[in-house]
Image (cartoon, each protein chain N blue to C red):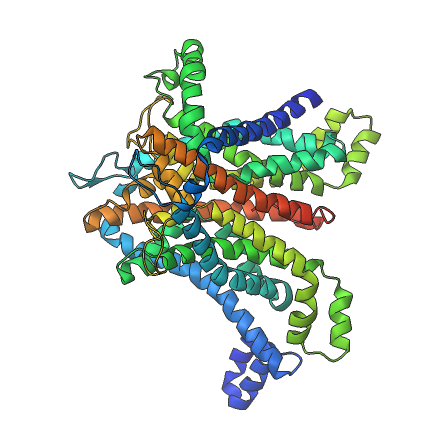
Length: 263
Length: 332
């Protein structure tokens, strides 16, 4: 039986290695400086993903500014403030929000932001990504705050500090590395999202000029190139995927390296 | 808080002081503000979920009024003729998810058993991390790989073999293109395996060591002992599988890129199909006319409600097992 369960594990790890090495093999050929800084051009004229890289970073910036503080605050509520049934209900809702399909989040943001504003925008895309981030950050923040020893809370309270100062000045700093880890994982997760951006950020073939207009992103660019009929665009899709994977796996591996002593 | 409401009749002062005590047991003004702020953020979470239901329901209203429950059972999806039936999408979504679970569950159990019960720590930790990395690969990347690697591989090697051996079943008849329900299911299987196996690992790790020792002490072999552990963790394992189902039901990009996107109900696994999420991803931006958009939003509402319920059930099952021993749910 050990052989059978080991085989399952080997196949899963094998699938990972096959996918990653295929991306590296297909992608590396099209990557050069021009590709990384240029914007998309018509078929046959080269072009690159510079605007998509910039767009993805801007979308991550917007979603982090909105999502990280809210997510951390919800985590603080769940760990430090909330008690009883209501906090249980909030925890349940946050957990279930994690499982809401991201395409539904996209439709929701389309309904409440894109329709009233009457156009796609980087802002709407950032909000959609933030909605995906909040529950992830909230739950990791809660777990990390709960790891802070109770004696620390009691000690600070015994010195006469009010609860808000204990939380902001003692508990959160003590859990800060763990909270940062959760934030990085959330950023890695949303940087690979495509579905919620289709009807919010939409995509663009130009460099972004403002947050109030459609904006390109690596993932949507990969999708559009992958389903196009042109070999040249397929090659660019693989190269863009390699760039995306370096970003996503890079964050995951850094987080693992930073937390290797704890888990 | 109910105490404050009940005391409302005793005059403003009494109710007010009760409110203050609830919000700030220490009587510190800063604490009161802090707790109110945190409470507002928590209420915001509840509000977001309610807003999702209301906004989707409002935008879907034209379709809900027009078709009623018939929307769920109608088989025709022809926007040009104004016919909108969700059954082909429901069929595609459920079938692709079931294919994914049928493949993924045995693998996930095997991985979790290997990593928790059999492998030494110096193997289990790095290998466990590698399996979890499968969950970090973005959906669109799976889709790209699916189009250019998996689909041709299935077309050339796997599907002809299946047709040869099981061709007498309607499931494995039909034209072999590499793009269809089976390919979508296999891609989904790869995507949910890290999720299911991670939760099963948590569940198995939460089964008390005394159960293992008792089984071994009674003369059980290692494998019989593992069966005892599996039986103990059964509700949590069920939760893990349902959690994987929730993920598979809502997965969008990878499936959209390999399932063929044709709104039909075909008995063959080789034929193109369409899922709810794929239909929204493909057609939402191009939909013209209120009814067409409303029908797509109603599909989104169905997906939201179904995944919310499925995830809720899964969370309750997993919580009940891991909370007893203080295990920490790791999976996203």
